[in-house]
Amino acid sequence: MNNVIAQFNWLLRTIIGIMPLLLTACTTSGVNSIWLKPNHSPAPYQHLIVVGIANSAKIQRAYEGAFIQAFKAQGLNVRSSEALVPALNPKRSKAIQTSLIRAGADAILLTHLVAEPMKSVESPPLRTNTVPDVYRQLAPYYQDVYFKVMRTGYYSGYQELRLESNLYDAKTATLIWSGRSQPLDPNSEQTIGQVMTQVVTQLRDDQLLPPL
Image 1 (cartoon, rainbow, N blue to C red):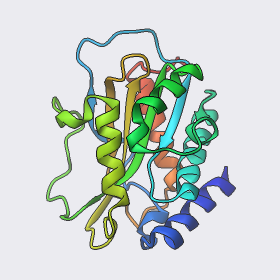
Image 2 (cartoon, rainbow, N blue to C red; image 1 turned 90 degrees about the horizontal axis):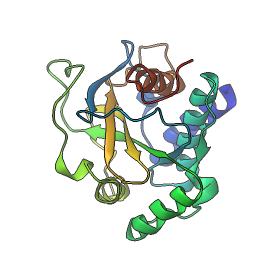
Image 3 (tube, rainbow, N blue to C red; image 1 turned 30 degrees about the vertical axis):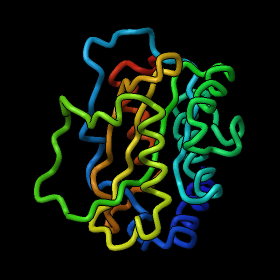
Image 4 (tube, helix red, strand yellow; image 1 turned 45 degrees about the horizontal axis):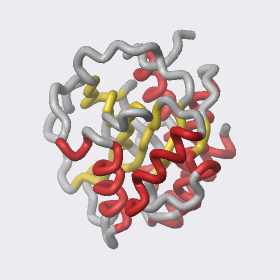
């Protein structure tokens, strides 16, 4: 696990060019800005596929590998989209969704780093009742994030960075759960892998994963 996290951190510094802020994670435990689909009560998802959205295939693999390690540490077998759909392309988002379903996924977790131009004055609330409309379906959300991340300079001039993760039901392609980490803090001893572990723990607390 340490090798995966070390690779993830190195790639973020060298390929994206983000400063050592990304070497560490939240100063406080957990995830906030959590949205859970109202009245959602299916059986816990058993077969997840992780999709990392990044401006480099290497960084995508690092996102997905670190998240898979976090899931495995909690006894869950999760697969990487990179192994199933090597070339993610927003113009093929429907085809990608079909491929992941055919691979046996019942849920798809998309994750990426959000660059925010302003520092938060107050901590975001733990729970939120709303999400942007573009989040509600997998294809529009994926396309929106993909083009943001690929835009030149997206990760320059940021004031805060957060890890955003959205869980979609594979068959309906609808958003089930959304959450962001607290701002990444260079003074924290937590690693990005621990932030991902917090996401997994929160998904389980919200009864979207099988109990331990």
